[in-house]
Length: 393
Image 1: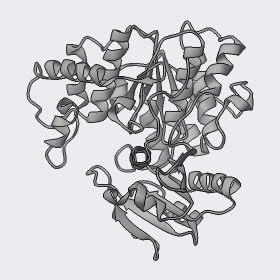
Image 2: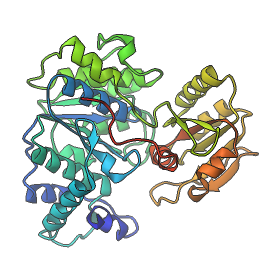
Image 3: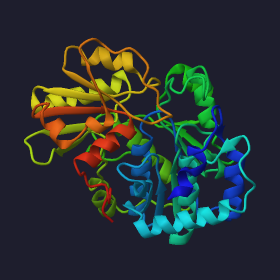
Image 4: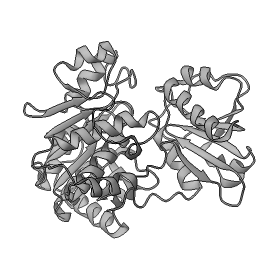
């Protein structure tokens, strides 16, 4: 597994991911031209939900589907799935060996590095070939044009809502960020978008807009809350892949009704206690408000909220929604995430190692856990959430 993180851990200050080097690696593995059509999901929020529902729809249509997401829900195995099931330890180790051998043929890194997320993307495309996948669904990490998913020009690109995050990295405005994310598309790519702000809509140009209800699916087959729009975008995008036919209503209903996505308005018991968690990857004011509303509908009241929002997320908006609720703020020890912004007085601040079943149980019986996917993944691991399979086939 060292190959996925080796160059990133040895990177010099100021170095960035080297897309050209990643292209050379993919070429050495002979995967630059995938054997199956590619659907790529980009955006700021809802990418995982769109990728999951696209994959589930394609499986219901009778296809074998390899899905690559970022980050993993709990483990690195979660990043690569076939028909909703995570790869095994042995499969991931074999992929790591193949990447290691291919990387050994490249010149030493000079002014950039092979990023972990990019290496998992390349490994996922390699696994799709090994597994005989009929379709590939890729979730971008941070960007679009600047992300390794851009090495594999998609047949269909789905753009979830775009916000002003990673400003100064992907662009200085939502419009610039949107243009960068749209850059994943090639000249023959069918591009679809969720509803966007006027600024982002103008920047995206001529794309197909998927409005609420655009999938035509019964509400019972779609997730509740803000994830519904992303799920519909994923379904509509899956329909546009070459060779896909509409699945029969029975198999479609069976597969979509079985979908679970831990960390997206998911409910979990804390082992050994009476504490119940609502875990949601809410990163802005709208998402936090929706998660709190869901918690209050279920519980009536909220005893405590555990939050993790790096500097580039909407901390001010989240704080406004949290109001007078008791809050514990968690700082993760990840060098690519910064936690320097001032916090509201009265919030407790802890490190990631303080999140244990015992500590969560002291916060009350009804606890909302909100924040970046890296953090919700940590909590899912702490409570032992099942992330092995995300839908039934």
